[in-house]
Image (cartoon, rainbow over all chains, first blue to last red; front, side, top):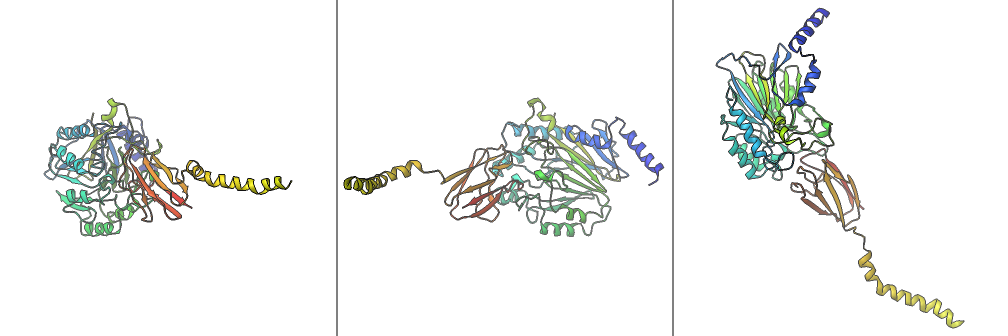
Length: 323
Length: 117
């Protein structure tokens, strides 16, 4: 690339982010802030805008939005959050207060805390109050305890394969729900497994390269922090099958904080939990529940609103906290 | 002299021997080291001690002191706990010598080992 071209790009980046913080610093900062954040891709350059400035809605027929929630941990009752019912309800209230009602919800797992029937029941009941009636789930490791995921599958996996993976289409966007919390090996990370990988290859084989893809799974599909198990050991193979697509958005949970990474045509994004926050990578002894002052709890819990505008290169991902 | 030698050489040892025989059950009861039981504490996403060495026949009890549930699963399929929430326990008696690596199936980075000798 010529110097002139590089200067032009730098200038544009500077204009877009003229609050004095460079992109790396901004990412580092916003990854923990948990406040409203809009990320869009414009010609391959990630552009960030503070939440609150209205997104221009082009009003095309093909446009729609959906909301991702994650890690509700129904049944958790320790000091980090003694009332996960209230905070999940707050998340539903937030969803219902969105200017553009979402078409459906994605729940990226750890629905329950101990895979108990009453915990799943509780979440289902609370989500019934959301404006969006369709909810698509993938399990977290807390949802498949003791019974190899049988309770989870019976409830949420009726049209799924294997340990609960599946795909569906909405207005030309192809959604793929993956399971990377089963058969975890000692010392290992999240795992998709050979059968699921083969299924992914077949599932996307005949899709046009211009089809926007959204992949959702519990544990991050990129290496966030391996020491704490925050990664998936065989995700590279899955991503290889998606290489041909112009727009891939990967939505994950598990780490209870916002993290974002852009790599070529793939945007990776993790959501906040609706139950409790966890520390930043390496900033604590272990990745367990993190206690914050009571009045700050809702600031570090949240939902993720995702907009698809037909004709735009990529999906716009908007995080907002619960208060 | 003969008498003294007899006392020192025979009677005393015999008496001491008898005393020991009589006394030993008591000795066994109070002096027994608790090698029959050992503890592992689960906290902060780790097993403590990470490597536990015990004699054959020991019952090891894992207690979860973390604020998150964990499991105790042998990597060789020898034992497997149900999920243990805070303050819940899991015990296993090691009847055979050997090395028993295990991990938490919920958080697989958590590993430990019991060495039975």
